[in-house]
Length: 106
Image 1 (tube, rainbow, N blue to C red):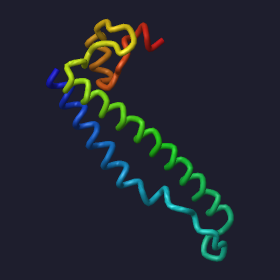
Image 2: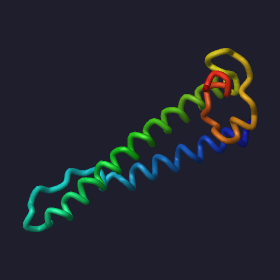
Image 3: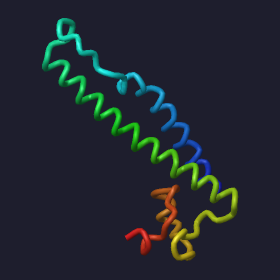
Image 4: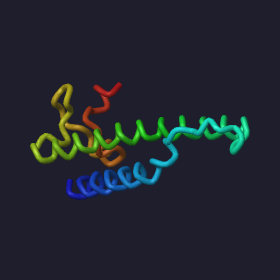
């Protein structure tokens, strides 16, 4: 259990650091076509969209981790939020933030 807790804390810190690093990629693309050609601007806009999608995924992952940490504090970690049955340890090793057993996740 302590290893899973440590894994959650480590992953949370990693995601927050990545989010700070990637902030510059999510900024608005300039419309000045004299400094950036049309294709370069389109490429920059595509990179911006991808960075925003990654940021949304990271935000979701951070929220899942925070909920898992809260379940640990409340003594509810490792139990399915849907059916109340234990979540397989192997599943928690793969995804420490899992809130559902494999049956309910399907």
